[in-house]
Image 1 (cartoon, rainbow, N blue to C red):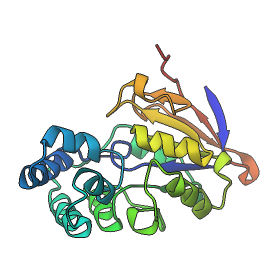
Image 2: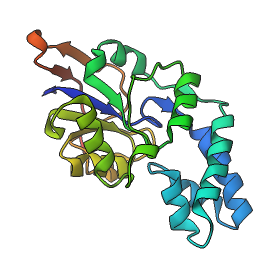
Image 3: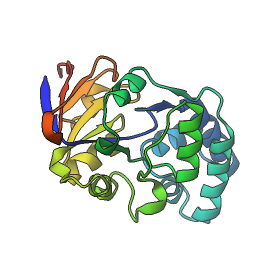
Image 4: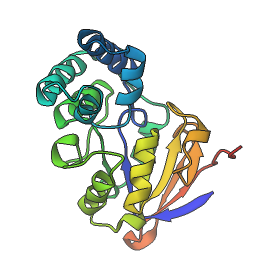
Length: 221
């Protein structure tokens, strides 16, 4: 498969960085503290802003205060946070002006995780702090495209979560999903699905005319 685009909008957790251990430990701790099922809390927390998850699961609590507590735990817990397969090679092929990150984490948490994984973030990227509505709303990816100076339709979103793939499609972007955290069956909002980012080849077109990506998508059942 070969596609032509101008920019790439990367989700962070589950795409660039594996932070599942930190996420599970922090949300388990919070769930037990507030009387929720940890498994359900972790499932509901994945792929969207933590404050939105808190509001959805315990609307009776002070969402700002609870969210700050969870963020502190996640920021401090860097055990097992690492760069995912294929990430370094893919980013190395991209001009700095052609990619950014669109994450549901706050800038503080995102910076800590990227640092732990050995990834230098772009100069500007989209975090939970700068959007009014998080994924699955399209606002984060629309802002990401604007940040790069491209139309959303000229951008590729790379996601691992259903909420993120949904947000990317709603924003008008093309969507490539990985199967790190969700099954291929659940990622129907994605245009294409791959297992990991390994083996994706990038050609920078002459005259700053964009990028050509080549990859082998999985066949849908």
